[in-house]
Image (tube, rainbow, N blue to C red; front, side):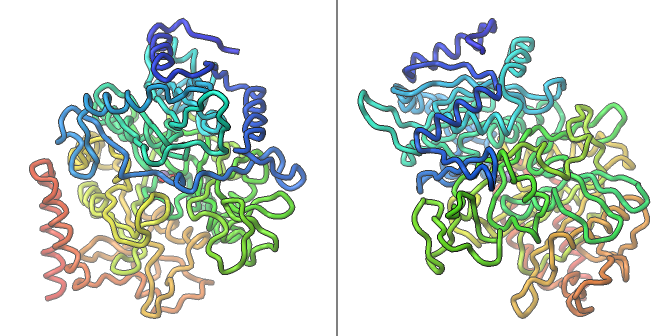
Length: 600
Ligand code: OXD
Ligand code: MN
């Protein structure tokens, strides 16, 4: 059991925060199984957790959050850089001094009546100099057990911090102090006062008022993306909101790919996809975050800094993601799913018919027709090691060499099933114009179209236009033959009858196979004004219930519809003023010319 540290900065910071937040107790977390068990028992006793049936789902728990604390709150997520310009127009900026003062007031006494847990953790393998270490101070035992699943947490991480002598301080409170004799609630939080603040210059995170997901598990979105993106800019690498997969062809040849998709667009499903194409294999390296560096061998190499999945449950089913289902069989925490009579969990998409006797995510009896039983952003928290499709090299500190980078979003029209960028620069342009129809992963309207460049809109810790320049700079350091090829995919195109044209899921392996073959030089492509699409017969569609007309519609590039997108892109780029890389305006101009030429 850890009781303190020989690291002066950590010791002093813990003492300082304790003096401010006034917890009843301080507990240093060692990450042991015993500690996990004890905290889970405590969460059961507090009513936060319910044990699921040992027979149905051994060693698993169900939690139901406050109905006002169910997703990341982007409107209360702040980048507090010294200058507003450094945060850029896509982030909420607050002056660091003012924010610090305001949050200090909120944190004052915020842990009264509670335990403050000291949670040392590493994003990335402990042995890797590329990993980032942090310490989360939190008054939420739910956060502690989740961090043990999601990160390499505990004693070994603390030793790494002591050796390095530095760490990223991550302060978290649910913002619900208990006065003497006051009874606790199952999910303490303070939704009205939520603030998730990032200080990029001093590399600190302060999060107040929420106990949910990315707001509270600070290693993931806050550290491994927002703060890491700033560190990556300064050090010349890339911290990305991307899955990483290993694709093996029937020949045994291997290629690694990354993919950026906005939240809840099927990233986890693609990371664990079981190919329908005979002989092909896909294995997972990561499902959400990837860090890429130009390595000594000249390749762009990626690691997954995480240790667990925090995946969206609804839509995870036997057809969409059988690997995930077997991974969730045991040792999993479910938050805001529905529950069955016999002590198991359920969500929309798990089975065609809901079982009788469900209780919904708020623990109320559920009736068919009364809305979703599971919250649309309900989640599972599970160790990566439980994924049967994990590639053995997923923890290799050297990373895996990337051959292809995929971008994608949820677009009902205009964007074809797949197209390839002409080169790296055009690829950066494709990433910068990504747009998607919004989902339930964040609070706000669902189904509206929003620009989500590189799927980093909620996660880039600095000016998005400077981030694009950084992508050009990293590309310039790669030899042309080592630059990954860039692709844009859209599984969500609909036909004139309003139905999805592409079956998706396992069939997406057909698109991966074409991408793979483009990387090895075997795949045929046809040039269009927007990029390269599969040439005649190059996309393997045999055995699919897909008419030639539907295939043509899927791959169609309509110059008129694309020209219709240009003014909005130009307007969007203009919001970045002088920061916009000149190369991106040139790419836009060149696209417009190619489209006009095609239209004739
Ligand atoms: C996530 C997200 O939770 O992107 O991964 O919202
Ligand atoms: Mn994500």
